[in-house]
Image (cartoon, rainbow, N blue to C red):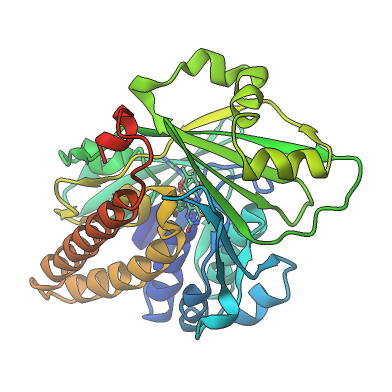
Length: 360
Ligand SMILES: Cc1cc2nc3c(=O)[nH]c(=O)nc-3n(C[C@H](O)[C@H](O)[C@H](O)COP(=O)(O)OP(=O)(O)OC[C@H]3O[C@@H](n4cnc5c(N)ncnc54)[C@H](O)[C@@H]3O)c2cc1C
């Protein structure tokens, strides 16, 4: 049976950043991700300030060569009927990107593999604790392979299945959900690389032009205030989109039509009650998850991945203060995030009767 120092559940940005950093520190690392490579994933806005994190991980050159779509700013209809422009030319970090998430995630895993990490794609990892760590099972195509690790990191995204099995609870701060759809245009005239954000009476929309030239439109609202069945039927979401101003006129101008079915997903803000325990830690969305309005999820996953790896490195060498220090960092990040979230939502005062906005 192959033995590892650390096994990581989940090969999204958090898992890969943790794996890259641990491998550089000299540990034997296993990284398993259950998603089939190439599958479309939502979560594409990469803010200008996050570039330095890719540099720290040693993956910036490959990233710049990968053909992600450059983004020059944001346009928002938020707090006023008039669109507000935020042009990245006035920011010190330069332009941002609209990622091809499948390419981005697999590039990070490839960087981890190059550093000696044992990367298993399309593979589900499960575990059973034993006296010196965890017995692992790697399941792929109906086959199971055993392994062993001393430490385990939950980078498995919002469900945080492993951390919850260890007794952590997910503390949610709202019930935000996202419904998204990819639009196709026969004209191919849309060149607008900015992120469009538009508040409406019971939630808000965002839209980006993806590297594939498809336009992603996403509607966000509270689970208990929406008609989920109606939105999951493509016509329902399309009818809601027709009520927007900025977004519907953009769709008309380029003759966009629904190109896929509608998908719904959790987009709530939340954190774990504890971020680490006996020989385990959580990172990325598994530990802290943010409202997509923040565009902060990927950058925080990369940043915390590096800190999580350093804390586990120190803990493996017997430092009892490393993981509590990591937990304090996460607590501070989440508190600052909640503060920002309140300020942003507080700017929208046009619908005094709306439960969605009153909750915020
Ligand atoms: C609608 C929406 C829009 C968003 N837009 C943005 C945006 O524009 N910009 C931004 O920065 N962030 C955005 N985010 C957030 C961003 O996508 C996440 O913060 C980011 O993906 C977190 O990375 P992660 O590695 O922690 O988790 P994930 O990316 O979720 O990766 C976790 C991985 O673990 C795998 N996994 C789970 N369990 C197992 C197991 N047992 N074995 C093996 N693998 C497993 C999963 O398949 C998955 O691939 C958005 C989120 C939503 C919901």
